[in-house]
Length: 130
Image (cartoon, rainbow, N blue to C red; front, side, top):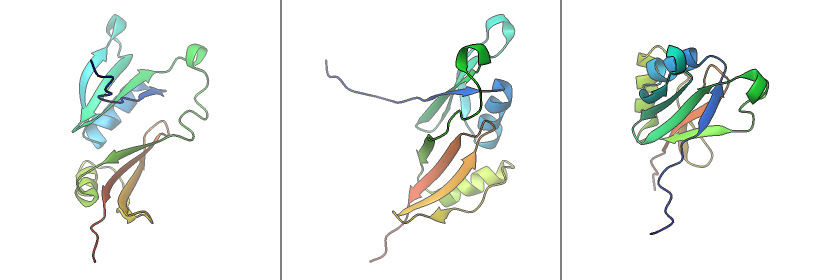
């Protein structure tokens, strides 16, 4: 059996999982594919869109530490077919998002912060003209 990695799925600790799950679903177009609701209260979920997935978990300050600084130094880059099309999709969902910008390394990028301050980038390769 090969030691093959199939997927990476980051786990984000969030201050209000209902608010965060709604943001990812309503504003970013992710679908909730799994959830854990002890005592009928959402505590963890997995969200997917296309080939990307992430998990959200309700942070508990006594176990997970303070919210301040959470996510600092970490960015999530979602590779898309067309950042312009992704921009139009996010804008149609009511997300105030700036137009894609070209990076010096050849990517067309949109940056968004989620409700907990995690930085998300949706990007596609710029067409090369020769």
